[in-house]
Length: 509
Image (cartoon, rainbow, N blue to C red; front, side, top):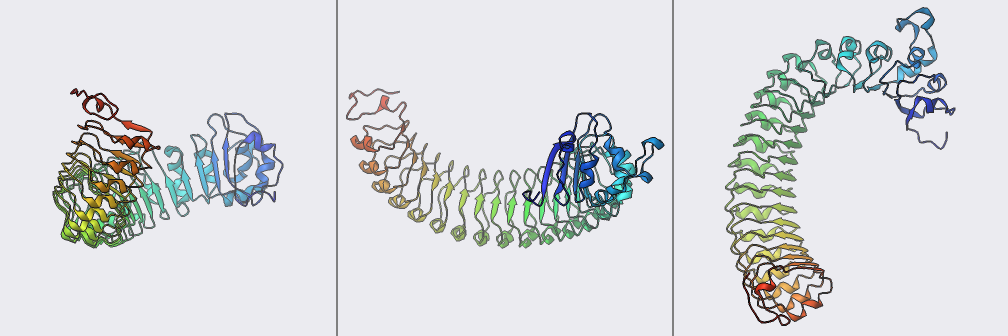
């Protein structure tokens, strides 16, 4: 046994395990047992396990013989000939703290009275547990009743005063009792995928709660007492019907991660900026038309997703988000960016796809660590010269704009690997374009290019080039020297262009 790790998970059938004569003491911590109705004895093995912490029993048909063996006399109701008293198993009984039962009818009748030290209960039939659960009310710290079609909680569950983790997802709860606040030790609560339309006023008394999942319910409002959840660090309220947040929301000063996607929020409370520890914020698919002035005070924010909203402008203090690394503003109505936008000096990934931007501020070039930028489907006609200062940029999407030219400084983007410029109005590329030595993918389809710069052959790393639907008169003779170029999207190009190797007969597509 010296070659086994200190904690060893065993996953065998009883039949296989019963053949193993090794000594398991202080080694096996988790035992996963499955059978198909067959019965046999494993007294020898059970007698050797003294440090078991978790027992997962998958018996589904008939009662296995070993149940009669491990239960001691005072706790079993059976005929005298069936009673077996083996006190050697008390160490197993007293050490077991996790019990997971997979669809068996013997939990309530046999196991619950025996394993009185159980702290975690999951994967069992609720109807079998509820009648006896009161016997664990001082011990159980984790209870999982997922997908049980429950519409209410029995009083016996509400008496589990030591409960720290409670998972009730995918049930049929429409409301919670006021006595729910009795779970004074609760740290992790999952009520997702229910039908809750409101929360009791006393919900805010769950002051020890650190993780709360209320996603996929029917909540249209939160009680003002919600802000009393002062220990809350992770909150998921996505896929509800919230149109506003209470003013007390800013009191959730410990909040690190907040998910509010797919609601009906049209604004955020002015106190929102008080969430000074917030690092991850998801407000996807709401109806936000503006952000509160104090939004820039979220100095710890690292990831912000505001995609699919109605924002037409950002507050001037937006540039104060000094820790921001990822910003998604896809599908809004932004027509301009504040001059302070360039102060987002930690920003690495920026998505501004499908807005109404007609220009970028000169400070945009101050985004010195930006490596991914999507400006597709806007109204851009020009890029500022400062755009060439984005020295760490690797991917840029500028497709579906109104660009007629690129600044000469575009060639300074020496780390650029992927460029999307399709569906613009480009008539020429700057001579500096050949300086993009790292470029691998270039899409210039659907523009007005009549020629390409001769130094495009310097793009020795180029492997994909799209020149579809351009009125090109010819291609540089030296383009064949780009040995890495494996794919050229030239469909419908040759029908309307000339080159030194094509017949000089022009035909419109």
